[in-house]
Amino acid sequence: MSWVAEARGLYAIVDPSLSGRFHPIELAEAILSGGCAVLQLRDKRKNDRATLELARELAARARRRGVPFVLNDRADIARLAGADGLHLGQDDLPLEDARLVFDGPIGRSTHDTAQVERAVREGHALLGFGPVFPTRSKENPDPVQGVEGLAAAVARAGVPIVAIGGITLENAPAVVAAGARLCAVIGALASAEDPEAAARELHALVTCAAASS
Amino acid sequence: MSWVAEARGLYAIVDPSLSGRFHPIELAEAILSGGCAVLQLRDKRKNDRATLELARELAARARRRGVPFVLNDRADIARLAGADGLHLGQDDLPLEDARLVFDGPIGRSTHDTAQVERAVREGHALLGFGPVFPTRSKENPDPVQGVEGLAAAVARAGVPIVAIGGITLENAPAVVAAGARLCAVIGALASAEDPEAAARELHALVTCAAASS
Image 1 (spheres, rainbow over the protein chains, first blue to last red):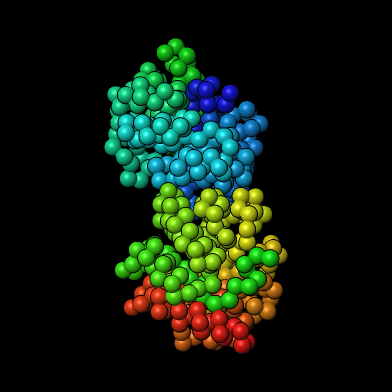
Image 2: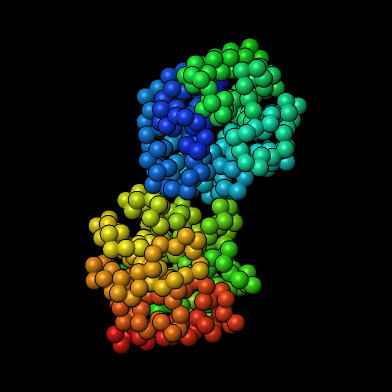
């Protein structure tokens, strides 16, 4: 059984262009110290050497903590870095093609119920869904789906949903109540005064809320 | 023996964002009808589904003509499209990593003799070198190397060189005389009145010059 079935809590995303005043490795290490269910690298820098190097470093640090490491977008780099998962956007490779390159659970970002249904038909192991709330971590974000949209996506998906977009300590309980097992956070960690403490609080809150819902 | 050792003539590059008034498939078909030694897809659109689809189509059309098909940048998509070669830029994957994903000749773009020497040490099968002349097909191009720079690169390389950057019917003989077996052309094909005729002329000229040099 893959790590997907059991993952509950904070789905921490590190993005080198959104890591605030921290080096991405430093930020990832703080998050891993605080605690998270999954660590994902989202790297849009268009420098594959740098992405592979960073992915290998984060994969090694996540492995030491027993946390699955997921890479965004790139099947080849996920394979080369020994990632535990691959997360694809709407314009990335079709699942059946990505599977020929990367052997492991493959997620897909979805932004409305039609995309959820298509990703489920394709056979994805888990889905990102959002933005649940307004976000500043993405340029040209898709329309906000709200907690209602998230609940509808969960009802249709039948596979674990990673909620994303504007999630904070304040609204995370409502996100979990809507059925998300995992809450993805980028900005609220990178911009935190103390990312380790922020990760600890968010992971504990989501894990606890998920256990009781 | 791979196709690299025997390739002489026009190294035609189709770029969907630089295909002028033509659909990239239409442009590629015209070039293949005219004649070329290699057909490369350079796709910077950041839509992997679209790139894979186009790469598969161009690979099939090139194969029908017995022309090797090369994809830019992406080891995973080159593998999935059944490409005959992969061409990497300076910021793309290291050769030893790319080889773990793609099985076939792998080239590297180089822009000065230090980059040539590094690529040769890495073990690349062929090298792009340029810009030989000023070019409008690349944003922020590297410094122009001239025919003298090209000749120096050829002397150092020991593997086939694909000359690139501002190559036309007029200057191609000098490029071949400097030791390039293959002349890469993007803009002079996409902007030609008749790309099939332009490919025929360029391929014949470079092949003939290469045979007599």
